[in-house]
Image (cartoon, rainbow, N blue to C red; front, side, top):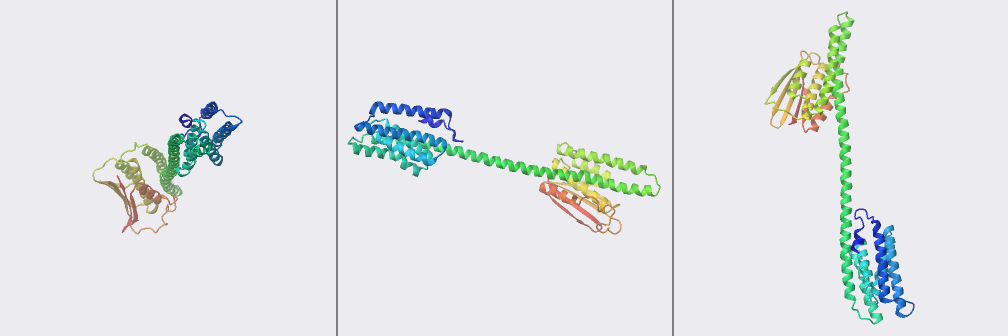
Length: 381
C-alpha cells in the first residue's frame, strides 16, 4: 500500500505507470485471499460474502479510475463503498481489513481531516454492525481500528507531501513571475539608458557641428578662407566618435578617471577645471553621470550664451562627489531662446542628466546666478 502511494508525483499528481499495475495486482491478490478464506458462493452466508466481495472490489476499482480521471464525487462514493463493504467482509475474512485500511488512506489523502475521519470510521462501524447482525464476536473491531490508524497515518503523510510540493510549485511560480518582472524592469531601464546615451553622444556633437557650420556659412558668405572651419568640423566629427567609444568604455568599466575625463572636456570646450579634495576612483555609472552633467552644461553655454567664460569645480568629499559648472557672461544675459543655437536639440538634456543622477541617489540643481548660470550635481560615491 505504501509503495503504491509513493509512485505518485506529489508535485504534479501524475502517477507512475507502475502504480495502476501494482494496484490491480494488489486487488487481485486480495480477492484471491478473501475467496480462499471465506469461500463466496450462491447460498447462505457464502452469498453474503460474494456480494460484499463484489462491492468491495467494484468500489476499489471505481476509486482507482475516478482518481485517474479526477472525479471527486465518484471517488468519494467508491471510497465509502469499499470501506463499508470491506468492514462487513472482515467478520468472514480478516483480509477484509485491507479494504478498511486503504479506504482510510484514500479518504485522508483526498479530504481535510474533519471530512476524512467520517469515511475512515465507516470501516470499523461496518465491522461492528456486521458482527452484531451475524452474531459473530467483534474480535476484529480493534484490528479494524488499527487498520484505520495505519491507513490514516500513511494518507496524512502523503497529503502533507502533496501540499508541500504544491507550495513549492507556487513558490517557484512566484519566483518565475518576479524574475520576469525584474527582467522587464531591466529592459525598460536599458532602453532609457540607451536613450540617454543617444542624446548625450549625438546631441552634443551635433550642436557643436551646428555652431561651426553657422560660422562656416558666415565665412563663406564674406569670402573668407573656410579651411580652418572645415578642419574644426572634421575635429568635431572625430571627437564625436571618440565620445561614442568613451561611452562604450564607461559601460565596460575601463574608462579613465573622472578628473582626467573632465580635464579633457574642459580643454576642448575652452573651460577651466578646479579639483578640491583627494581625487579617487569612482564607479563607472557615477563617473559617466557627472561627465554627462558637465558635457550638457557646457553645451548649453555654447547654445544659450556663446562666448561666455565657463569653469568647473569637482569636489571629492567623504561619501560623495560634487560637480559645479558655472558660466560668467559679459554684458546682459540673453533672453531665453534668443541665442542663435538655442532652438537646437530636443530639450531633453537637463531631463536626461537629472534622470542619471537621481537613479544614483544624487541630486541636481540648475538656475541663474547674478551674471550667468550654474548647474550643480552631487552623487553618493
